[in-house]
Length: 300
Image (cartoon, rainbow, N blue to C red; front, side, top):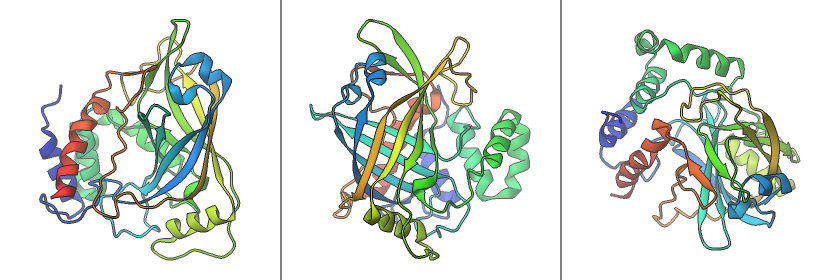
């Protein structure tokens, strides 16, 4: 359990980026700048062996993708250092959906919502960083690993970055066995567009041009936990017993913006379908409450 009310968390995150607690724009509290893209996903037979979820049975399913910058400032330049995100919603034939959220940082530094909010504040206001690290020394190895991975370095394209899901899930197989898994979205192929892209919206402009030249494909890489790997701690470092290719995501076009007329789209990592179960990761369990609070600020 956390002592941090979701409303307080959203107040503090918005304040960190110079935004008022009350409604200002229709943008998200974090990952405020982004756009939507359309595509499909086809799972591999190995994924179907390990999990009964509908989108993992091998039939092509539509996906909605959102590439974004992690900050809460919707006007930030794409040239600024920032974590980048790739969110995917898999649309199953029965009308249900399940979401996967990845980020360019391979390690997550903190275990609790309180520490995450404090880390975000310290990242925006560096004078707070020494105090944060003194209170949260366990975050240092992950921050160092992310720096080495150049997680905040502006990429040439959203399509060339690898995106790591923060949370673990339990896959249920038809034979009654189960596996704890973590996801990685790893770039497979795309065609670099002609021209150069240098403006403040260069990532959005580049990905639109890249999609015009051909599809962007990603491998859904899945790490299967070994004994001793902790699925309930987002900071834990795994030594997976197996890594599999679970399928191919094929992004084909810029999508019509589903939020253009005031609609709200939420990519929720707790939105799961039969065949998948949540871990007890405290940050994962907290996210729907925080998202609901953020949506209220966007919708007023």
